[in-house]
Image (cartoon, rainbow, N blue to C red; front, side):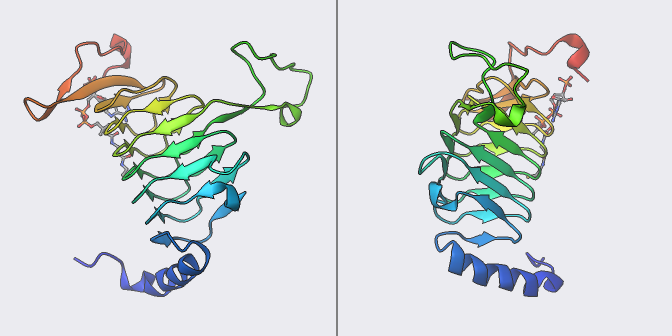
Length: 203
Ligand SMILES: CC(C)(COP(=O)(O)OP(=O)(O)OC[C@H]1O[C@@H](n2cnc3c(N)ncnc32)[C@H](O)[C@@H]1OP(=O)(O)O)[C@@H](O)C(=O)NCCC(=O)NCCS
């Protein structure tokens, strides 16, 4: 089976030429791509993206970092003003949102934001995000500021990740909760004894 539809080849050829000119380390960037602060982004090696991705690098150099062989599908939006790190071999489905940034502070010891100030004028507040190697993030997931997703874990489609996810787990839902973990002795993804979903969240 051919990997690409032949009717797509002229478009892909144009994307390949632009990729090599504009993102020499990348494998293939599908255009259009929307980038703020490109010089602050470490694009890693062999990055592949779908169409319409958006990267907003609002902080210092390296505030968004991709490892090797990362693949993003269409319309992935990543915002980094402090640190968003995407590890080697991470696979991200379409319409995923990952951000280390909020307009204002609403928790913690920093001064909290006043609702009389328009949101776009509130100082940005950032909590680093880390997606460890071999993670797979399903379609339309949101990963919120301050989150670490551990090595090899999987986030189910449409989940909202509000708490850290340990390594080698499957987490699903809004808020995302761990339902399975990889058992090295059986080689199977086993149901987690501590499945924290309430009865009415289960199918
Ligand atoms: C997360 C995922 C991999 C889990 O697969 P799985 O382990 O085979 O799932 P199961 O069918 O055994 O489901 C286990 C439980 O999780 C629930 N569940 C699975 N995926 C879910 C999701 N995305 N959101 C909410 N609940 C989910 C199931 O309803 C089931 O609930 P139960 O305990 O009440 O029966 C899969 O469901 C998924 O979301 N895949 C992502 C698909 C995608 O985005 N593809 C893009 C291609 S890059």
